[in-house]
Length: 257
Image (cartoon, rainbow, N blue to C red):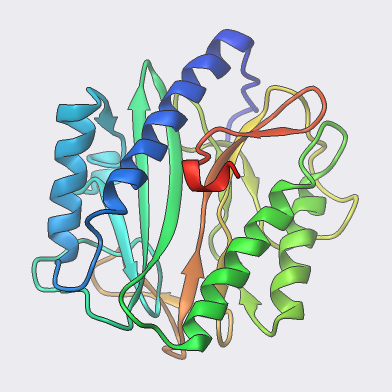
């Protein structure tokens, strides 16, 4: 990856705008993601909302040849699930919706887990503990901390709860490009790795498995699944390192309490 691009106050203001709009997309989807809907229908609803209502660009569409505006990863799909007309959400499913949005030249990236109808207590616990693990990583972000501190906090929380952390995929720097330096691993050792500085912007997006951490990519070249077919969950936010801590640029209204 190229060198890290520190963002100035004007650039951070634009990223904040993109992040706020992306939070609005999830607020919109909260009303629509439910049993009986196909993942392609969710994709199409999202595209229309981003383009028509927000006058923004769905940044995933066309990136690396990907044809859609989001990833929809259901149950044992870890990440990069491809929307499909034939994949109909049903009660008991858990699904990660991962969306990127560009406005004013800067990109925001976030994902959220949706529980469809009544899910098992085990599935709910995985989703909840993955969310907590993401926040454990976010909360250590500040100038002088290291990426190893972030990874350590996530890994410790996941493994204390009996889960494994996917190591094949990671968070990433973000700004004018969807993927910038640095890579943000979700495992690590305290005090190791890149030292954080004010103006850095990156995603924290742990993928946590019920079973083993091993994953594989399906023949479509995109969809990543757990090798043991056990459930996986993921949450993601775009983070800025501030003078004295962090700012979550994609924070949603329900998280502001």
